[in-house]
Image (cartoon, rainbow, N blue to C red; front, top):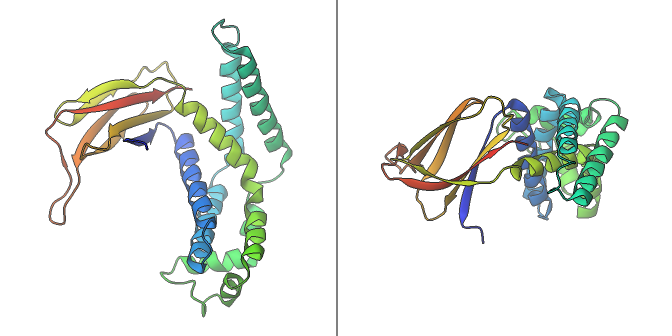
Length: 256
């Protein structure tokens, strides 16, 4: 069992969007394991959120840039004698394969699914609290009553265009998270601040705290400097306040 809680703070908009997409796909996986109507409703809501992000961002272009950046960095360290060349070549081949798949997929990903009459109806009514009742969208009510296999086939068809880009995002975030070692730090009276080297392309901050510590980490900052405040959770009558205790934690400034 994991005995720490890890808080992540993206240092640029690209990584922020990638992490949001990652979370939505994890939610989708969870809801798809359920077999009742409420699970399928939650799954459809999550797909709509995914499609909305794709409709507002040129993610294909952003991911190709990120994959190219990773390939360039890995090629620069290929001559290092401490590098496992077989593993490195395997990773480079995987990056190249994903890039080629993305280049081969024409058009903006997810737009065709957004044009579905059912999805348009659900999206329009979802802006209204409780707006997807059976009397609002009878076609959706009908779909929810179909057998599970039919629903899975439909959901697979709707989400299939995102599979390559999801694989790419998972790979990119995995690389970033393991790119740098973690270091033990202390937040004196619940506060910690650090400057970041401007010459280094930091992507993500990770703050890991032991679960036994009754505080949560509130992170703020940007690519030059960041701060962490450890806050006592609120009760019914009070707002969260910064702890006065010294808090030990692990800090990872992810570079890759």
